[in-house]
Image: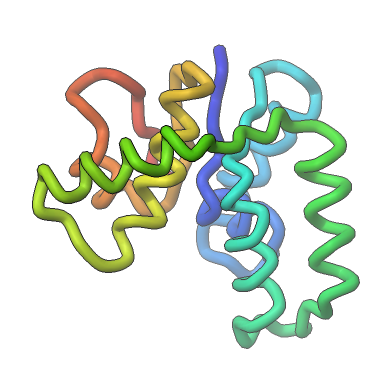
Length: 144
């Protein structure tokens, strides 16, 4: 089974004080043990880094710690999916056709990576927007 981890799931797995930490950490452990195929959108690396280094987590997460968390938990284990120029144009077309605007564009990038990777499932703590983006039954959305 191929599973794409959304940025919100990775953040939850990395931050012990996060309310969804235990559940997210279990998924991440399964991925690192290769019980599931582990996929991450390239865009999510930047989003996770940004949140980890700017949110008021206690203790604070420095840029160096954020980099290490990403390296040890994502870059060393996951398949990173990136998008082409054609993919970017397709995302914008889909958003315009569905009259979607604002921050959902970032979820659309992650959704396109899940489709490109042929993921079976996507793990997220933000299922609401992904339900709006994905065609029915194309990828199972697992909410933390």
